Image (cartoon, rainbow, N blue to C red):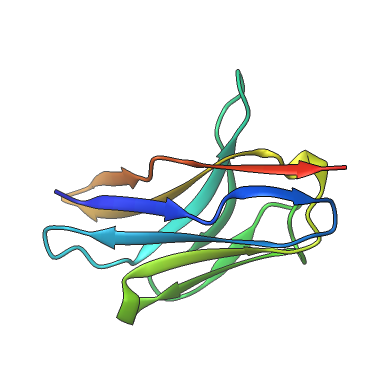
Length: 119
């Protein structure tokens, strides 16, 4: 059973920083390709940042230059460093890991962590 456990969310003032962590465990699972998503109530989950198995990163335009996604294979964890936070960054953030098996995508999700940015 694979588990992704997120931490690091909270309340911060606009302009501040937070670092989200996503620790993977279970069934010999190793972090590889994945990303961070965020979701507002009643809205679709949106991809904020992604990292490939080879370490190539990509970001939503709204967070480019402010957020950094990274991975620590030794700690089997993925991170999202969020700087210069804005009130519009307020959302529940989810980490995701995935792999392909016989042409099928297998997704794992964390439980979500709330990020609230006050103005």
